[in-house]
Length: 294
Image (cartoon, rainbow, N blue to C red; front, side):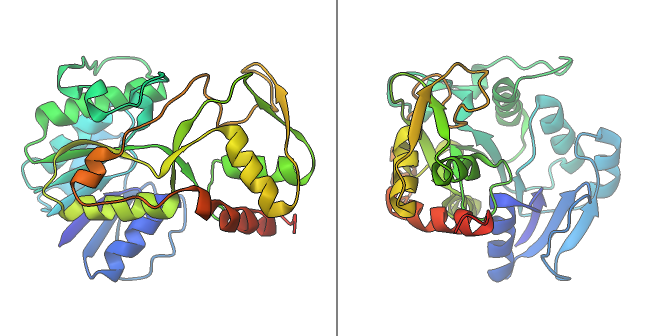
């Protein structure tokens, strides 16, 4: 297949790019060209700012793709720019959305909890929050794309080797150094997915007949449970302190509520995510070695 990938130079996007190449797909990536991707000469690279409507039109004019993966769309304006530039020359579009479209809530969350087709989008807004930008991007894609669209609602991504956000490293470093980790009074689960499992599932979505929103995750854990698993791998006991949201010691895995995503739809299309807990010790040691803590 001829595949276009917006992004793909880091984290699970790069892992997806590697899988696409290993399976023999002809891969073109669109990035701003600010980071080395290390993907080799087989990849076609297009340099453009995907938020620049005119630039995207120029570089994609007349190009046809069997499949588009969009890792770096954050607003409805960016969704519109991509669809306008590609026209009807795409057979399938996989958009990396986020579980943030839901917001914290007590119940287990199925995909029906957010209906993008009925959500209002505003192409003229001065700015968008991350969650609202993803909601409105979904709304635009599902209303205007001329091909089947998947919105992969990716949960909190976790990795011991290439998590550029530093979230997992924060917990490993604090546990290793006996530094306190800020949490809420009660433990609140959120859904996590490993970078490899996120890439694996996105790869599957490229060839699946499924269209629509779908949750992406390995399972649910609290910040305290993650920290205790890290502690077990390091032979340490994590320390916790109750903090408010502005405290720099606060865990980035504490979002002020519970956010547990149902994974039944993924199972229905034939994918079973491996459990998260058994993968944490290896990731912990990878992070600790990279941080010089082992």
